[in-house]
Image (tube, rainbow, N blue to C red; front, top):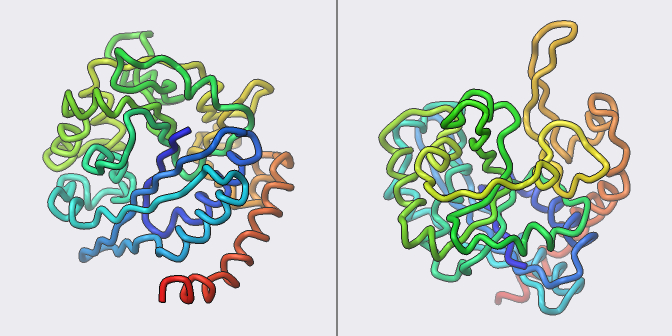
Amino acid sequence: MNILYSGDKNIADGLILSLLSLTEHCTEPLRVYVLTMNYKDDDRVCEALPDSFAYFLNEFLRKKNPESFLKLYDVSARFGREVPSANIKTRFTPGCMLRLFADEVEDIPSKILYLDNDVLCRGDISEIYNTDITDFELAGVPDYYGRWFFSRKPFKFDYLNSGVLLLNMDKIRSTGLFKKSRELCCEKQMFMPDQSALNKLCAEKKILPRKYNEQRKLKTDTVLQHFTTSFRFFPYIHTVTVKPWHIDKLHNVLGLYCYDELFEKYMQLKKEYTKAIEDYKEAVI
């Protein structure tokens, strides 16, 4: 299975947890591609994931399955040529846009499953991965909130959440979907710019069941749980953001204890990475 992630070094914790969850439920080899970058302006600094981190996770995956691997791609130069200037001063993080550069990386295969770093796997993803998208640019699950406000037609619910997307890269390269989306992010300020651009410009999308991108509340059939920001209305209207690496909040805010064992493995893997840095230095000399 081909899996895609993107972001700067701030996705490291989520990437470890997400990969761990995939290895718990996937028997097929995992071919993981990660896009990262360095970026700096007056307001923010983004640092790329280090090669040592990618080396360590690659070794981890290969121990699980010799045919698995992780490859890291620095797309800093490409991002620098197409900085989303209309959105760069907003709450939007530049790292979110990196998925839109997948068409520029020749190694990215024709079919790949994109996951945000705050997505955890709870079951076999072969069914979503093997979904036929020959005639579609991408497939995804409607955004829990956005479907009500941004869908093209009332009650059509075709505004997709971009945290889990099955991508037909051949078709995307052919139609120029990602290129057009990057251009729109450069020209027009939008709410959730990369997600909005994809929804606006994608002419051929396939709607997937909610269980493949559960953004609200864990259910018995959930295959992929996405820890997005949600709204709460009691005792007053407020937002709640809990990420998989916030173990105390998982317990106290969401009442989730089902990831405790996964979290322990994550903590152990972080310790092993710290110890493995010296091995990496020796390996590249």
